[in-house]
Length: 421
Ligand code: SR1
Ligand code: MG
Image 1 (cartoon, protein in one colour):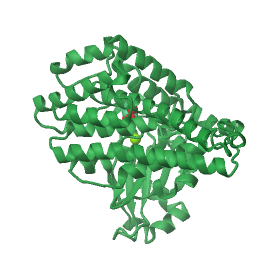
Image 2 (image 1 turned 60 degrees about the vertical axis):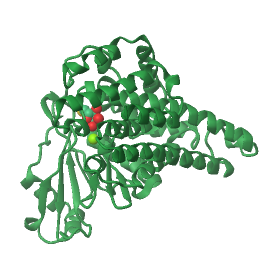
Image 3 (image 1 turned 90 degrees about the vertical axis):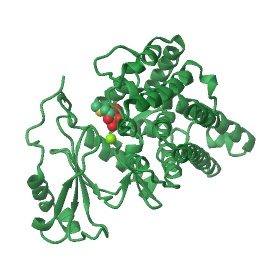
Image 4 (image 1 turned 90 degrees about the horizontal axis):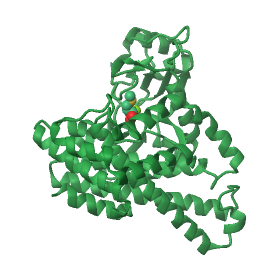
């Protein structure tokens, strides 16, 4: 059941946003000038919320603008799909939890209003959404590395490698109540594409055969069941929960991760897998070799940056005699070989999760509810279906036989061969 919106909630239009910001002194001061001169433009892009950028006196892009985000009582792109409002609260809590560790890899949080479910963060008006930038053929050579570094810095401090289990439990507990958006993930990402469901849809009958194989292949089903259990039972760290290329903004060498409303405890490979999966989607959608090579390069850069940063955080915590209960420093500080072996074991596990969740992300973005513009903007239907079919076939094989790509390096080789067929 969807609860009624609380008294006092209303969806703010442009006039309402102006009045809201004008009545909060810190925000009004940041914007400067007089409220009547502020420029407000809607930039809603995701499926769920209203998002506006507001420029104040500093209209020359020198900073000072704000990004205004408000939960709606329904899915933005489907008003009939009713939904509680609490998601911006989870996004605010996620930003508070990770920003001390990731610094400027996220936007600065400026304000949260629990009655109107409004989140205000710094405006990134000189940035572009990574997905859109890549679709236009742009190249941000540092972005994938920055996202890998972000995942390591955002997750490691919330694990029992870094903290006593009691602290991890307290930290994760509020996010384990992010039921609404976790239900979306469980249904849309982990379940629907593997059953007949009215939310599923795909481009053309040319994909019927591969869609049927995805639903019926026993190897796929075995992997899906295992990954459902991984997602729901492995409370390894605090996750972003929706780390696709639309949740990353880039400008020059600056990269920011946005939209943490799906934050949840879970396996670290889920965040890694969603990002890798969206690079794979982009790779298969691209019609030129240079773009495909960049996507493959970025998968490698992402994974290497994540792994190097994560094991380094772990090594430093151990050498400093950290208080984590898993691989306790008291046991491993003087056992460099044992620590390296432990790190290798864990990274292999995260790598396997990453590849499986990446395959599931590819599948759900082609035959599930929420598709991606990387494919949707390919004008020729036969071309689009052909590229989608190739992506689905790779993803299906990865799940049916996880040994077909036992590492990210092997995944890169396989994706290269399949995308170029
Ligand atoms: C109804 S929400 C559909 C998708 O949009 C979000 O960005 C998440 O990826 C979710 O699965
Ligand atoms: Mg989003």
